[in-house]
Length: 286
Image 1 (cartoon, rainbow, N blue to C red):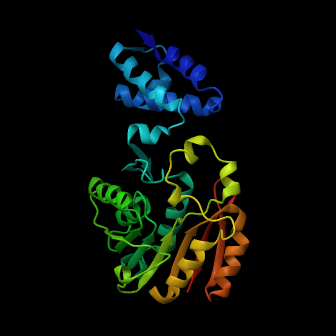
Image 2: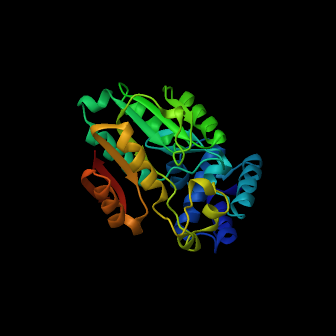
Image 3: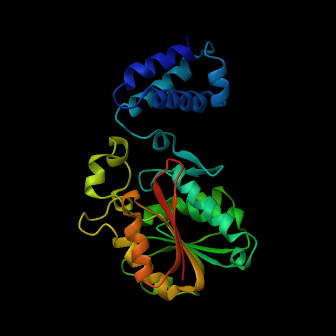
């Protein structure tokens, strides 16, 4: 048998060049914890813990996949977001900590006022992480979520069932909205739309560009605000007066998006930085 420490050494050797040491150690702990059915904290606390052959075989299979650049979340088939478990696969983006900050902002902004029991729309829901988490914490709200991808919606529906919430999932294209979303006006709209340009793509890692869905990531280089403009126009007729619009944004276009909302007659637009100090979120009132 080999110990946790031995496996960690192998991970560092095999994944060097793909990830930095801190990320490699994290991937190793996640992998061992998953296979051993225990916590990462316990794995870290007992580096001399011996692993049986069947565990080592499973860990090696995951390591082989990691060496191709495949994200650990897709390999395991699940991840955590805002304390909840979500199924993930290559049809949906992997939920990220920055999006948790956006959800936290929405929940704290809503509070216990009339918005807390209103209609909320999540545009481009993907795995459903935003819509489902909001429903979990704002259980009186009526939450709808749209996506152009049938496969993404299938995953989102599975995640709603997994987390025991009811969300109305709708197949629709926000760039060409039709009758599918001709429903009562909303108090709140939220979106984490595609916002990565081709230039941004050159700065990204293989485990994102090669595995995560391009339709959920990329926008044309000559029209990086494509989705923000479309959603702002949609919101102008589907968001109630005084309603809230929340966005996750490309850090390079914060001021341009604020200006766009001003032109589109939104008020009190607030640009907020994420935990890394990057312009990442916007809130605006209609």
